[in-house]
Every structure is written in C-alpha cells, then in structure tokens.
Image (cartoon, rainbow, N blue to C red; front, side, top):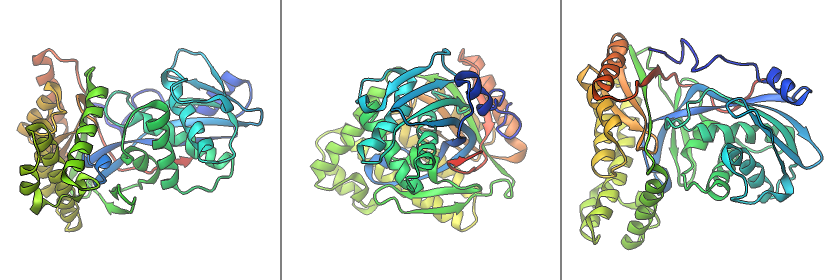
Length: 392
C-alpha cells in the first residue's frame, strides 16, 4: 500500500527547473496548494451548511513569472507538452477548453472583481490524484490565486482568494461547486481539521492528531469516475434549492433537526424529501463529530462517518457500487468507520482505522475489488496538512 507519508503518487519534480525548460528563464517563485479530504459534511456547502475538511500532503505546485504584456501562458507537467497562450483581456467564460480553463478562470475572476492583474508564464505540476474526489481543481485554482496575490501585491486574505477561486470554477468553468474545496486549499492548517460555516465563512481550526490516538485516516481511491457525475451533481444542487424555496427558507441549513419531520411533510415528492433529509442530518453529523473531537473521542467519530455514507447512498444517491464496496469491506475488515468523500459517483472513500489495521484494511479492499473485477484501488494515509503557501 502506498501512503502519502511514504511516497508521492509520482516522482516529485522541481517546478522551477521544469519552468526553465519550458520558458527558458527562471520563475519569480513557486506556490503550492493542497488537495483535501472531507472528514464529514458532504453536499452541505452549497446549502449554507457546515463542513470539516482536512488538507492533504499532496499539492499542486505553480511556478510563475509575472508578465506585463497581458499574455497568459500555461503549461502542465501532466499535459501533452503544449503551451496554451491567451490574452488576459480576452478571457471570457466558456472560451478556454481543457485543464487550462481552471487557471485562466482564476485570472478572469481576479480581473472581474476589479483587481489590476495582468499576464504570467505558468508551469503547473500536480501530485493530487485527478478524478478521485480530492479537489485537484481547487488545488490548481488556489495555487495560482496565491501566486497572483503575491506577484501583484493584492493583499487578499486566504478566504477571499478561496471565494475568487470558487467564482472561477462556477462562472468561468461552469461547475456549480460550493466553497468548501477552495477554503480547504487556502485555509487548512497542519495537524488540524477546518470547521467551516459556509454561510458566513467563519472557521475554527480543530486539533486532529490521529496518530497520537493510535489511529490513521486511510484514503481509498477507487480510481473510478462515472459519467453522470457532473450532471447529477448539478441536479442535486438544483433539487436542494427548489426544496428550500418550497419550504420558504434561504437554504436547507435553516431547517433544524427538530423541525425535519414537519419540513418533509410539506414537500411534494420523495426525491426532494430525500435530499432535504440528507442535508439536515449531515449538518447534524458535522456538529456531532466536532463535539466528539472537542471531547478527545476520536474513535467515537467512526460510526458517524459510516452513518454519513448510508445517507449519501440512500438519501442523496451519489454513491456507486465501487464506493459502497470499499466502505462495506473496510468496516468488515476492522475500520472504525468509513464513508465516501467528494461529489460522488466514484472517487475516494475515507476510513478511520487503528494504526495496526491500516495494512489489513487496505489489503481487504484491494482483494474485494479484484474479486469484483474492479480496477485495483490506490490507498494512502491522509496527514492533516497546511493550506496554500509560497515554497520559494
């Protein structure tokens, strides 16, 4: 089993050297932003609810040199070798294809918000697995946003950069994501989970020393992503917004657990009732996990994670056979709890395991996938890490 503390998913390159190879000059600096795994609080962020993400050691790194001629050049170590060249004053939503639309969208969002930014030469290298529900897109956006904040002396707070990066993904790329991923990428701290209220962006760094408790957070990347993910995600969000409008509240976050049954009786169909039930109970699970962590009961959060997966599977219906198999097998093999993390329809599962069971749980899931004819999963331990920063 590969772990994040043992080895990166690929050989760690030196972005500054690769930048020189592409652009024949040195970058002004290198900036990094992490992927994330969400401990609890799934599909609550776009309902103004609560989330509890953890930043991964895996980062996307951007080597960047400022340009003053209005040209934006983008290159990725994971791409086809080509350099995408754009004019910053011509950036418009929907006009940039492929991976380049994410960093281009950040520059567009900064300019659209009135910040006096221009061009840059950019080289991207990422070790955040794509398609794994670990927020590789937010890591890319926030690495470049942090670089631009430094290079153009914008003086923006991490949370403000996160909001701009989310706007890039919503309005420029066209993905209706909430703000959790970008906030995790900019605001997480080493050894902490980020307790975030997505309505007003108030946050608290919650100590999460799983190793001291003899535990590990095991990420099981199923390495599958089903085609319906994007459309289904947008459909779930639209359903939540429709339910909130029918219930006369600004967002589903405003339905208290004590009022859930009454709210469900007011909704016209089972699909909306299921969406509401998940969001309201998931917000309550976040609060429950926070209380357990504050009490020092890390083991106690395991059953809450598993209950969260059941809600995502049965009420929100964003799980899939592979993630269900990973959760079921991990718990049967001794995990204290497990749940899918991310948007769903594939991606990754997070399992809370005792230190001595880490290898056994990972092996059991691999064997179950092989028996079912699935592609071999990838497993690594998640160590709570720092948010976006300058590396050099």
